[in-house]
Length: 243
Image (cartoon, rainbow, N blue to C red; front, side, top):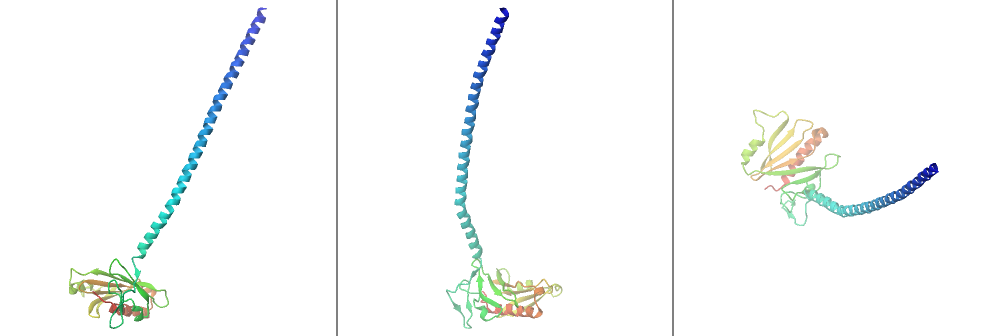
């Protein structure tokens, strides 16, 4: 009888433990389920937030694109404004029919009528006394011949000419500079002795020094073209109304 009673007691204890484990597993399952549900809700919230952030970023990008385009256009316009086609609204023609630009009254805008190699009207800078002429060398494409200036307010014409011309005792081996007259103005014509060099003309007045800089190098020119270029820049200089 005692053995049977002990067996019943053990069976009862096992049943209680099984019931306890089932209840605990159900409770744990509920907690796990709640945690999973919470995680799912968190993930959904993150997905919504992520979608929201993506939408905001896309909207900001769409808004910024026109601004970038506008700024790029403004920069391009500023660069283009450095040189502008000479305006024709105001004609400043002299007795010889040479029409000067309306900004500085210095650069002839119809120089192409006097020099065959010049193509069209010059480009005039509004930020200073600068100009550029399209010059066609031979059968090549026209390239810009620049005319720049700097003030000559600290030296007399004689002093400036002495500075520009090489010393007679120490002539340069790489170039030759000679003094010429451009109209009534003293000038220095410099011709390089190097194949990568070219021709430069400087005209000196009381107020400014005008520099004529063709873009061509002797290695790209025939002897005939080089002589024509020297003649043309001197002829172009004679058309200017120097200040």
